Amino acid sequence: MRTIGNLKHLILYDTTLRDGAQGEGISFTAGDKLNITKKLDELGIDYIEAGNPGSNPKDMEYFKNVGKLKLKNSKLAAFGSTRRSNIKVYEDSNVISLLEAETPVVTIFGKSWDFHVESIIKTGLNENLRMIRDTIGFFKERGKEVIFDAEHFFDGYKFNSEYALGTLTAAQSAGADYLVLCDTNGGSFPNEIGDIVKTVSQRMEVPIGIHSHNDCGMAVANSIMAVLNGALQVQGTFNGYGERCGNANLCTIIPSLQIKGQYRMVSEKSMAGLTALSRYISEIANKKHNENDPYVGNHAFAHKGGMHIDAVLKEPRSYEHIPPELVGNERRILMSEVSGRSTILKRIQKLAPGLSKESPEVKEIIEKLKKLENEGYQFEGAESSFELLVKRYLGKGNEFFKVVDFKVWCDTGRSLLNSAGAVIKVEVNGVEEITTAEGDGPVNAIDRALRRALELFYPQLKKMRLADYKVRVLDTSQATAAKVRVHVESTDGELIWGTVGVSTNIIEASCFALVDSIEYFLGEWERKETKIHGYDNDSKDTGSTCGVG
Image (cartoon, rainbow, N blue to C red; front, side, top):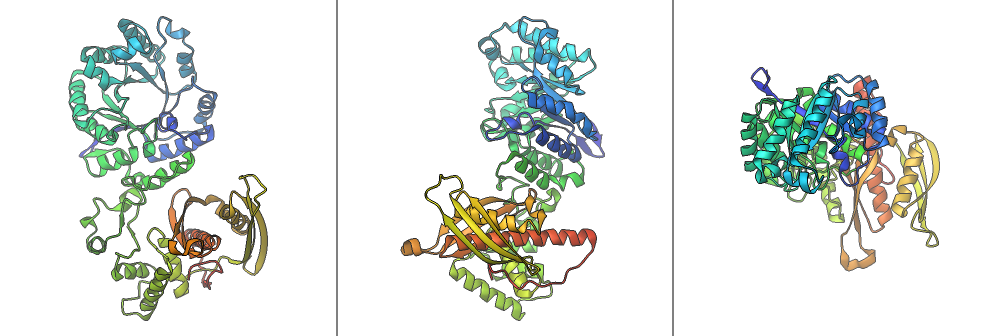
């Protein structure tokens, strides 16, 4: 194992674009794959498994265009199977398509479980060994780096260790550069993985890799156990995407081994961009980000209990195993009934450091907060609405727009698609704009109309979208006259923020939350622009027609 200072260097192999794309609901375009490839290269991934060129035209399109990217850190790998049984390797069209992809690396998977050899691909055990040798030898003769993925290795080893090891010996003799042990069914336990990897790494001369699936919820643990027992290459996907229960999550493996272990995989700068990249890939995959994910989830460093908050504000390591900024995440102090006054004060001081608990402004804001909570507002998970409330009260925000008026209607004569319409009038810097839109229901219609109107003034809003929408009835005894609380989560692909609105009118409550969401985004955008370009805007926020406060 190569060392960097006192750190051992591990090889990262990302298969988000191939194995991850096999996850339910994920369908990357060729353009998506090119964009993700650039991001993975910037992070410092050693190998990017980009797809199977013999499986579909989309992957072939990707391989034709990926050479234009001029990657700095990553090697591209085309993925495919050993030749089919009882034919010459050069007669196999899938093998030839791997060659035509023109990648410096080829990853070949082959059967290592005798059950699969005889019952699934229905060939002889010796022929399978010849298939492995012939295919790897074919690519080595043509100057390719070859990685051998021993499919179902751990199951094969448990049932027939001699044959499973024989497949690795065949690959090694043909010139394979890495032998990757695959827990394809995801059913192995960490102790099994550790024992088997240790045995194999001692017997083989070629470096060992690990490829784990998550069917028992142990893919990350299995990958780490493999590394601790001699594996030098770790395969996985971003956000754990993959077939069935997914693959080993590199967003957990990378910081666990680098920050908490004695291993080096990416630069500190790249590590600090891990959360943003994780969210970016969620957006491209059109999947809701898993906020409970370690390190990169929105909940990973969120604190709610009063005693916990008090402790973490005094000494962060009391309830945080690493500083969140190491992975580009941030500490979140949740606003709730168990947070206490000190939590509220800390959040106010974040916006106005000069205020203390004795400041009249603080006392008035706390009274306002109590009043809103009594009306049904809850700021847990909607801290952006609370931040806007404080800014409006202190006159620290900018007024980006006003909602002058809006009207929503539903047409029962239509199909469910575009079953509602909305018209909205907004004012930006004294200029009024009236816009109409249709939507799949009244809330979707008002959201579309509001965005359509504001994008004329703020085109950057095209980067923002709704990630989640929840409605809670607050007093069921009032039946249809009850107040409702609407909670909206929004994202720009990197950050995620929550806002809240309350009313007896669900459309109005939704409008409150939507307006806060847009105002928060525009405020953050302006703050970033100010930091980049150095200008200052001292205009004050007078409050929105459709906002909390």
